[in-house]
Image 1 (spheres, rainbow, N blue to C red):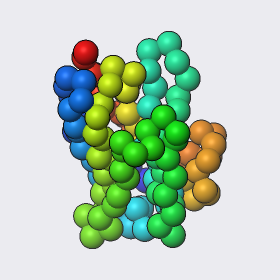
Image 2: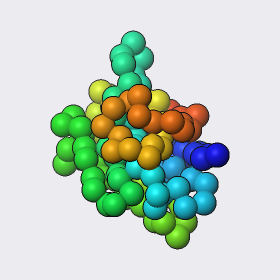
Image 3: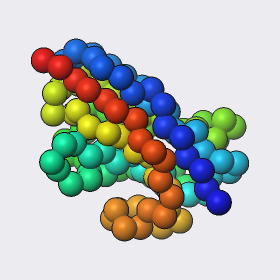
Length: 121
């Protein structure tokens, strides 16, 4: 059973940075694709970044150049560094894991409980 726990969310001002962490159960980060997925109030879930087990990285257009996904396999942790945050980034951020490429939400079998990010103007 894959377990995922997010941390690092909070309330910040526009232009600030935050780093989210996703602590995973043993070897998950090196054998699964890990995605960061967010859901804003009244909106559908959006995959903002994903890191495959082979090291490929993909970003949503809405976060390219501002967000960076990375991992530390020794710590079984995946990070999402977020810069130049705007109120449009306000959402609950989830990390999720899949054995597949992770391009679709329905591919993710395991989910964390999420961490809230609130950006005020």
